[in-house]
Figure (cartoon, rainbow, N blue to C red):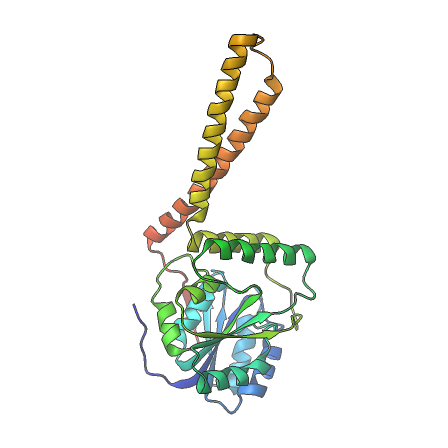
Amino acid sequence: MVYNRDMEKKLSIIVPCFNEEAALPYFYAEVKKYVGTIDHEIIVVDDGSKDDTVGTALKLKEDDPNIVIISFSRNFGKEAAILAGLKEAKGELVVLMDADLQDPPKLLPQMIAILETQAYDSVATYRVSRKGEPKIRSFFARMFYKLINRMIDVEIVDGARDYRMMKREMVEAILSLGEYHRFSKGIFAWVGFKTKYLEFENVERVAGETKWSFWKLFKYAIDGIVGFTTAPLRIATFVGAIISLFGFVYMLYIAFKAIFFGDPVAGFPSLVVIITLIGGIELLILGIIGEYLARTYMETKKRPVYIIRKRY
């Protein structure tokens, strides 16, 4: 389904928020420095925050009617908030930004100028450094990008942010994808369109704490891999074939040794190790298959990606 509508604004700024009460006023003040004279709207998507993010947004809205607030019934995740914002956006240009100011608002005028004067459909951003980020997280992040780019047919830029400005045509293409499990970085690459990348140095949060634990990032990475490639299933098939071949050869070796040299009980410890190893690999392969089955199961339920509690 394509969400065509009459464009009412030049620019729509989508801000997914989860417990961003402290950061939101700073974000608003900084963004206004760069888009104050542009016909725009700011769409604050409250993803079931536990603090007073909605109250803070409502106070800002008292002086600025261009603020739209969407409040979820519970926490559905950033991907759901991005989707809700894209559906709500009425701008010719649409940009996704985090409220913590790790996406520099000073790039907004440059992004607009590029889309207005050059033959690009979107302007995306990526970090050239991970200063301030834990080294172990940076290591696994780099490994994730290397791994997923080997598996999928499109390229996801290492360090790419969700901070991206798009023309309406690209937004409509993204909204036409009705999948339940969404991985925006992959979706942006999959729909295509001509994209220019801007680089910037990593910026610390202006306030509050990060909502991304290592475990959440790990699950997000799994969603990205499973959502955009079946390579893990092919790898599982390949590993199973190799193990079967190894087992057949080892069986011939044991039979040959027992027939010609006797001592059939020798090698018991190695046998236990082999059985344990194969059992672990079997469980791993079943887990991979289970991930794909689970996503198929959720897709067939046809549940909404999010539920809106109230819209201001």
